Amino acid sequence: DGGITQSPKYLFRKEGQNVTLSCEQNLNHDAMYWYRQDPGQGLRLIYYSQIVNDFQKGDIAEGYSVSREKKESFPLTVTSAQKNPTAFYLCATSYTFGSGTRLTVV
Amino acid sequence: QKEVEQDPGPLSVPEGAIVSLNCTYSNSAFQYFMWYRQYSRKGPELLMYTYSSGNKEDGRFTAQVDKSSKYISLFIRDSQPSDSATYLCAMSAAGGYNKLIFGAGTRLAVHP
Image 1 (tube, rainbow over the protein chains, first blue to last red):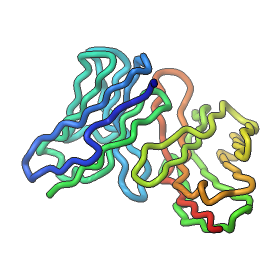
Image 2: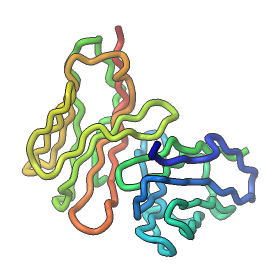
Image 3: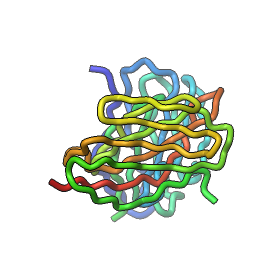
């Protein structure tokens, strides 16, 4: 069953803590994307990767980091430098999205 | 000014109504236009994909693109309560990777 798997579904972060969101795909797509969704603002691009071992900043990359060591995997780390991390995070390949991770700062 | 403008609603209609959802955009380079449906706490699901101007129909859904007016629409016929969701328009320019620019989304409620 092809698709995109994001985990965890819910994540809580303490102030000053780094957290990593997982994104795995079995669609054999080269390009992968991370978006952030806030109420009333649509989706904004954080990072994207067109090929293994290469990635580019999107529109709101500050406070985030990614890696692309395998074609199937594109994890996103939300660092302590991201001052307003509470949001819904979506991973995508081409036009297909995962089910999202809701991150909350506690 | 945002590249893509979309009225956030909410839009409330009775079951069976025809729904019209719209987006306007400013970048004339956009050539690929999409509509996504997003249920609460879920990822967006691609509904319609259109290249350049024209109409595309799929069941109860019709997408229209008017590049001369920089205006796209999604029509839902015979709306059902299960259509209640947020509808996002998205678009991208030709060439390169598919960087999508999204509208803010319109929340639709179809009541029985």
